Length: 213
Image (tube, rainbow, N blue to C red; front, side, top):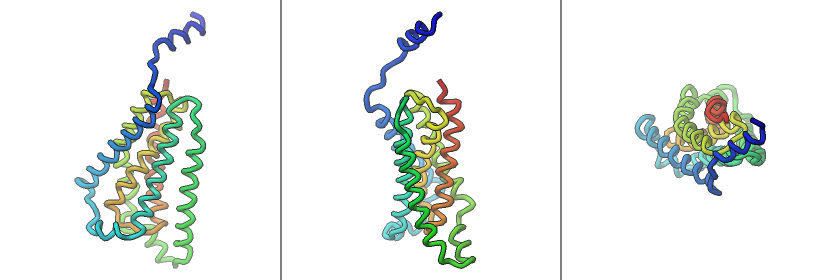
């Protein structure tokens, strides 16, 4: 069988995807993933006792804004990588700008501190479990996003998987803020970001196999 004939056979066996399906399906994945993460926070981790008063403070919303922005960058990249030729680099730039901006604020807060204060700011009271908890909360949504991508046409499996995992990590980290009492830029910049990155790496590892054509 000649190559053109094989291409015709494969093309005849494909099903068209409705315009706008990718962002709509990924938005549904975000809603489902956020709901699962919220359920896990409520039933497993428990909301922080001072949640009502914390929500009146500025840093609670700064932290949520940072992680939500990472999630938006992940969504944007995932949606672009879901189809061949999608321009995903602008989404990556957005994510890097968000990281750089938050990192700058962390350095500005961290630099004037003395040694003991720096250690306390970096470790808080939950540095040993923060990243792990975010990864666990993100895992269901990561899998959902990968299943969505299987219905689309990503041609960069590992990159698409990383974007999906980072998307899930950003959503999960935002929900995790309902439980986490930490309130320093350096803590969030280290352990929250690591949770998003690890979720992305898990997505990349799974995407290598689940998203292969």
